[in-house]
Image 1 (cartoon, rainbow, N blue to C red):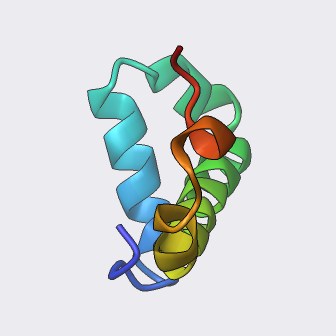
Image 2 (cartoon, rainbow, N blue to C red):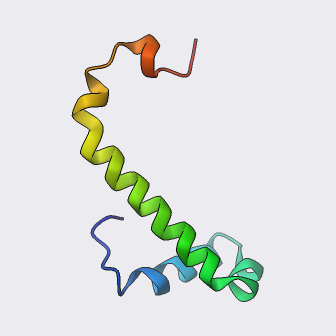
Length: 66
């Protein structure tokens, strides 16, 4: 997802939302759908950038299960 250009993101986000059955949200709130996709892309990019640091944490620090 991070390889997607800023120019291509809106069309991709709206198409993906429609394919996911969120056509009504796309119709009623297209700007929010695009902002949500941008936020998700930024979150994934931040996680990728921090992955080496996250991998160095002990399991109880970052693990959510047991």
